[in-house]
Image (cartoon, rainbow, N blue to C red):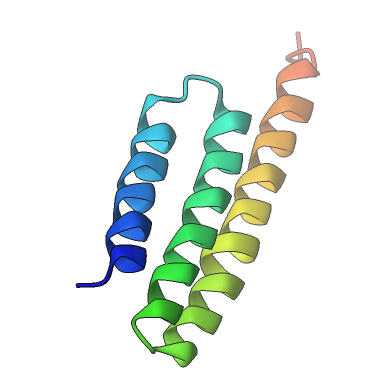
Length: 84
């Protein structure tokens, strides 16, 4: 195992831990996107460019955007007053 791969695996573990330990949902989403970027680099080092491209599209872009949209929808619906 190369030193680069070992460093990236440690970084992936640290970014995954950051996702779990973050308390604010928005920070969790950004940590999740960062974790996706690190995993993309891991797949590139492992010479799996197709998996890396999929991880980049889904893990770093699509999923965080969906989570941010859901958080925005919850925030908007939470500000409405319930019908009396």
